[in-house]
Each structure stands twice: as C-alpha cells, then as structure tokens.
Length: 192
Ligand code: GAR
Image 1 (cartoon, rainbow, N blue to C red):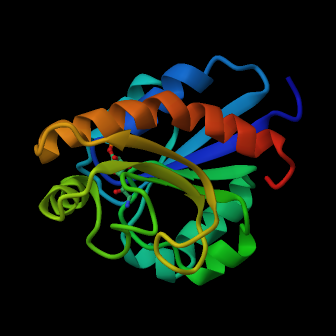
Image 2: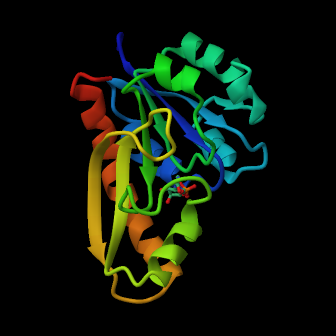
C-alpha cells in the first residue's frame, strides 16, 4: 500500500513496550514501523527488533546533540516518533522539527514523579514511599522540557499493595493495553 503512515520507536533497554507495539500494529496495512532507534548497543530491545525484522539505528548519546539522529529522522520522515522506555532527553532541535509528532509514555501520573532520574522502578519506589493512594501512567507529547509536554491520555489505578515491583507490573500491563490504541489515535487525529 502506498502512503503508509510511518512510525519510528525510540527505546533504551528491555523493550517490552516496543515488542507490544510490534505485536499489535505490525500487521496493519496502512502503517509501517520503519525503524527502532536505540542508544544502547547491548539492549534487549535490539533482539526484539531483529525478531520482527525491523531495522535499527544504534547511536551514542552524543549523536542526539551532534544532529546524527536528527539527520536520520529527516531522511525517514516519520509521521510519529514513539518513545517507549527511552531514557534520554530529546534535544530541542528534534522537538522543534517534530512538534506534536513525538509522544512518550511515562509510568506515573504526570506532573507527579516526572523529570530526570524518574524512570522505571525509581518512579514506583517514590510513589510507594510517599504513601500515594493511586498511580498509573501518562502518554504525552514531547516538548523541550523533560516529561512536561501536553498530556494526551492518563490511566489511574488504586494502589492496593505497598510493593513497587507489583505496582510496576500492574502499570506496565496497562501501558501495553493502551499505548498502541493511543498511537493510532495520534496518527489519525490530524496533528501527526
Ligand atoms: C515503561 O514502564 C515506560 O513507561 C518507562 O520505562 C518502561 C520501559 O519498559 N518509561 C519511562 O520511565 C520514561 N521516563 P520496557 O523497556 O520493557 O518497554
């Protein structure tokens, strides 16, 4: 099919979110997962990309600043850039060129528990430490400030057990349930 919508995914580590996106979206004929961008050459997500036959672009963190990543994105011309467990800040030259075309998923109810150092289990530990009654995840547009772009979707859950590992598992399961749907919504609602 011509004129397929193109998405690319950025991930740094495990990549369960990336694999879930592949499982749920790869068969859609109007969409192409063009590339995985990864800043860690030992990341498990690279094996997952191989399994699904998706090209990868491995880069050093410095390549975010020296425009290597930006130049490649400009070649690929994605309709949407999806961050799925990507742990570095996206520099302003990329956020400016791809305004409202970059989305991120974060395992807390932003603006709470966002910002530098707040990822994965660190987030859930802090949430439990602070005796929060609820948590969840947030999908948001990425702008020049870490974890601060416009919120697209949030899902809240009550915290039943004071156990960060359990909370992390519950939140991740929900992330997997909703992220593919929201990606499709972002592609179809005109901004991307
Ligand atoms: C996910 O929980 C995602 O929300 C989080 O990293 C995990 C990645 O898991 N992202 C952040 O914390 C971004 N600040 P995965 O590598 O198995 O997909």
